Image (cartoon, rainbow, N blue to C red; front, side):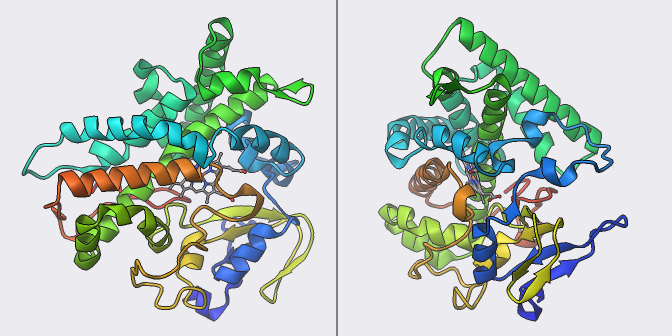
Length: 369
Ligand code: HEM
């Protein structure tokens, strides 16, 4: 309703703050994500403002919360680790892990897909990539979930310190006994003549860990739910598992894991979609709304594997477009293929309106399925 009324509009900020601007149209969302006058740098926005938040700086000042040149420098190091070619090497590990998790599924009874595959698979994969020892994975996953949940600020702040402290210790241990993980390579990476600073390393490790599984977990649940609610599409993929890879764009468009918003801050006054936005205010880009904009995707509420959905914004757009997209796509493809092949009779155990969604601020995902 907001999108058809006005695709860029101000919304109350609450507690006396200045209005936020919400972008819900596809064209306007792309434009916003491409506009260098919209900054990701939260530290510039919050500078001088009274804040009760005590987030660890490595969590609040990540690459994702940076503008060029800092962003460019950090992103360059990570991009080459996560190309489609690099991810190819990981595919056998992802497939093996998926199979091991599915081996533990009860045959014939109800089970929670989120707990039994969507959460553990991405956690195991990103921890393997970063070289996080197996014994630490559940603690790391808990802190990460607390960071994302719309919980008490104190819990979120404490989780940020726990995670950053853990990563600092892990990096120190790897300096003493180097291994072959992505984190080891970042530790020894040279960018020009500069190595990454300790703070940059911790912040990259935390970002990769958190971004590397929370969103993929949600994407897996959302995609399977979409299939279970569209029996024709489910049948088609069950009969042709090779089509799963080509279906991913449409599944991600249809129910985007980073759905509610990704935000930016105006560094100067900007006119977007005909709306004037003043300097120094938050702009929230609602990727889920943009992906259902009928002006870009006709009949957007229809899950249609035959449409060209490649231009979806589920991974964002512009310089911050998801650097982990090749890995995420590999995980979702391998997992969905395996589930449809090994459990062809899979169906919803509860009516869709009884499904529980996670209470989170920016992402959209099921608490259980
Ligand atoms: C950035 C979505 C999986 C790492 C982003 C952004 C989106 C996104 C929308 C851009 C946010 C913005 O512009 O504000 C997703 C979705 C995923 C997924 C839907 C799963 C289906 C992953 C994985 C990794 C990852 C598996 C890591 C291996 C990152 C990083 C950034 C990012 C590091 C920041 C990029 C930058 O600032 O340049 N992701 N992501 N993501 N994602 Fe993902």
